[in-house]
Length: 213
Image 1 (cartoon, rainbow, N blue to C red):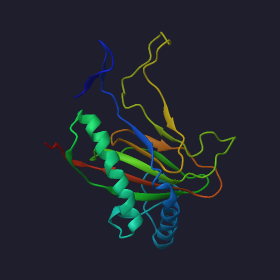
Image 2: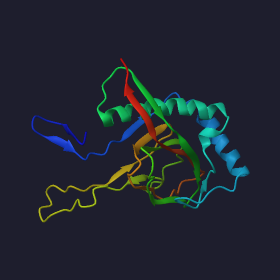
Image 3: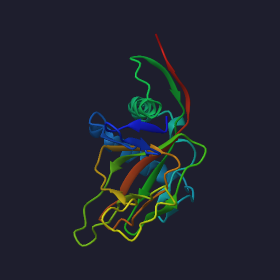
């Protein structure tokens, strides 16, 4: 549904859902993910996508045989199911849920960033933060992911007391998972911290979401 009650006589219409949670069970395994990322970078030339600098892995990371990748996928599927059920207002205790996963690893060093982009042809997009690097006090936007308001006609009139448009930025942390609609345009500010920043990004196409008796 495109509208849902948020008060006695107020509906939310054309809202954009956004999931943010920390995968505590994955945190102890992030070292394995980081080691795999650096191993693959040494073996692959990588792909040129939205990345300006840095390294973007080739192919679908979820097709790889490493157990750590399968474990991450097992944590992503419940999160995808949850946000999908909220989107469709499904309240059944049990559902038949099936969704694809296509992912890749990003490794960014100082000065690397991602240009504005979105992921057409999918239901959801997301990112899991493996290693976010250090904060840089004089570069407060370093490594921040920023989302662009999808409501293109959301203009501000002469009364500035209540603007409709806004800016959404997220300061990532190790173990953080973000999931958002694939149409939501986003970009990553240049990273200026020491060392490398490692993320695993993904797309998902929901194929089945059916309540079960």
